[in-house]
Length: 595
Image (cartoon, rainbow, N blue to C red; front, side, top):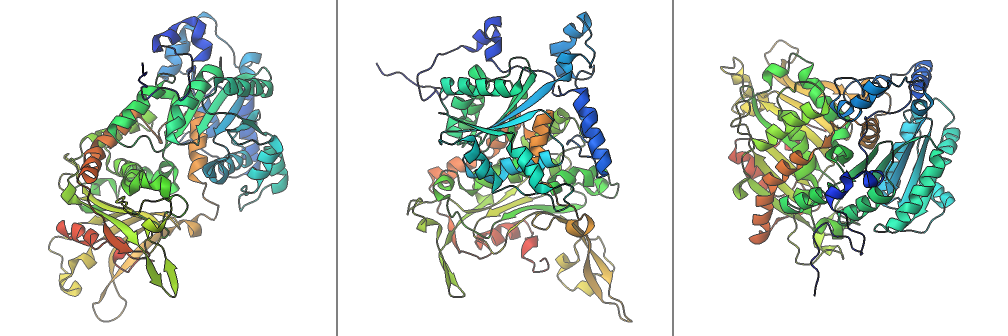
């Protein structure tokens, strides 16, 4: 008789445990253990503090604003519910001073699962080296690569070394730092669904941990269809017995509400919510991080942050290249799932949320969830989809999306989408939030544009003619490239006449801050190591995001909506302009005023 496999079923036959079985003491060492977020030693904390002060460069902070050394000391305080729940009874029975040997020595093991893939090579390993270069990793740490590819430790190091770079403000011999980092990198080859191979990895980890308190971080840089296999094997065979174990999960988190919910349910058979770090690298970008600082620490902005003064908000993502090299993957998801449902929607939630009680992760994420749950259901008439077609320009030919051999010739997958979204609450009622994301467009950029309302009874409206939009103040946060914040204002041109001009109050990051801006993955990896969850996505937040987009995606696919074609390298489908005009909005990135 055929056996029905649930979404959580492994691709191979394995021992099955019921969730309740993990409550038994006999299985405690096989399930990921939740412990206080920071268990590094006071010795290491003081050492890193001394090194940073000696170098006299700004001290790195975790995302909640605490200095790195202070952040490690927070857990275990009475205000920390996780520490209180799991450790208060033990502390009451026998207070353990920080200087005791078992508290003084800990180690961090970081395992990159999918180590031979592009993401690991281009982003994860370079980010880990950058943290090492900045002295943000503990003295006792090791990095393991895990993948199916057969490779030696030395071959892994050679592969990694080709992508490592030092900061532009080199404070030490770069080659020496690289050599030290590479010596801490190791490799283990194994199948993703093999408990035996993860048990072998566990043995290697224990060998490097050398009896110290082991803390383990797994980064899943793998396709989502093998997430559960890896989590199952790692939880049963390679989790830390008495330290913490955390897992970073890369998007996509499912394709719709149903698949996302199933994935979450399966992961929670082996992990607690506190151990799952769903990463969206856009939340680690400097300008996105600065969004809440700009709003909540400047009196000039917070009073204006509502429907009373803001006419519309635009969230724009564009790339000047197509899906070259990843068309097969992209065709299964499309631009809405790939960019809008996660990156842009997360930025929208951060932008529109109410002031949180504090900067603690749960307080911030609570406010983001409220925004997502307050959003009006997306209607098909408020969405435009497009797909780029072949184009010749300057004697060079550019391919169409369907020219990719891994993409079906009759594919209706959108490579461009624009949408008008609304938040049904008192602060934002009636304000259109316009999203636009596309590939093979005329420029590469990601930005947030806030267009303010016209000045009531403007004394100078005659000087602007009939186009009052030219007199509209606009705040722009350019996330990439060339990070910047600028505010468009109206001013008088010097001279005897009364001629008005639109100028910019500009904060260009590369001019104001000459230090290299850390990559988003550096910030997020550091936060995961610290146990700081503010920039990671909670399960109810993910549910609310999919609840907004799933009905739209289902309608697009069931009705087989044909995307509007646009030439490779153009400004996108004409329909996007009509969508904006429907709400009396003009796309800010197409005005010709911005570089």
